Length: 162
View 1 (cartoon, rainbow, N blue to C red):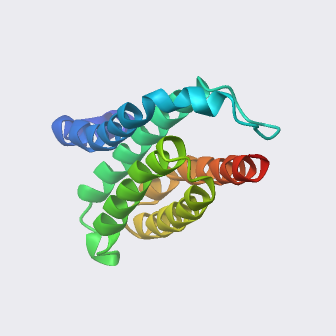
View 2 (view 1 turned 30 degrees about the vertical axis):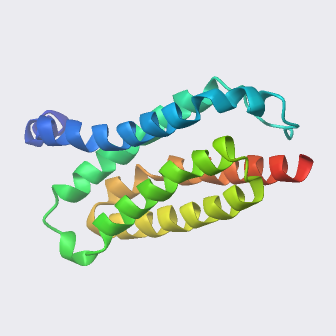
């Protein structure tokens, strides 16, 4: 019964807009770097490097979770606990958007790793801030932070091996 009541409180239009923004960021970054996967396929990769098909699947899920979490932040009356929540969200989206351009398009592997560290810090701070407003919004971004940690391993190893 609680779940049904929860669903009735959702503003579907706002939820879809919140999900659409990070998905559009991901799609645009993907379009700008789509021809770079041939280069990526010939790079020396570390152990545990997943198949290329996994990346768009994981990122789509992460963007959806990111959008849902932002919806919860936007629709919570407790925003004053972390007024920088919106800024952190938008900053990390911008840094997220630029990373594949640096890595895939420009092939700046070391710079990309350092940029990824910046993204990791922004997402960590965003999770802390979101959690003050909505525990669920914070938790929804934990997979994102874990994936960025794994991406950092891959990025650093690709720089090292190539």
